[in-house]
Length: 112
Image (cartoon, rainbow, N blue to C red; front, side):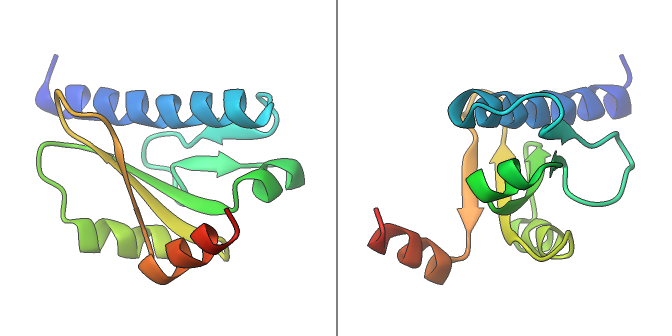
């Protein structure tokens, strides 16, 4: 498999992982949340229904690579719409992590 193909496959795996976790945690179905096609503009994981956006109000950008420019990727997530940007990053052998605006995160914690 070429490195471009394998990179796209890694990206798809992370998108599917996020989508599957959201579906399971929030009781969503295939009509509520989908992964973007490679090269498609917008969020990598698309929240299609009002129920999905209410349950998880984020524009999700996924990066599965050994080196990620976090600032650039987070800025990309900010362009996907009016929901809060959320970046999910992963590299080989490591669990995915999330990048979220710190002030927004602190607001979330105040209601937990």
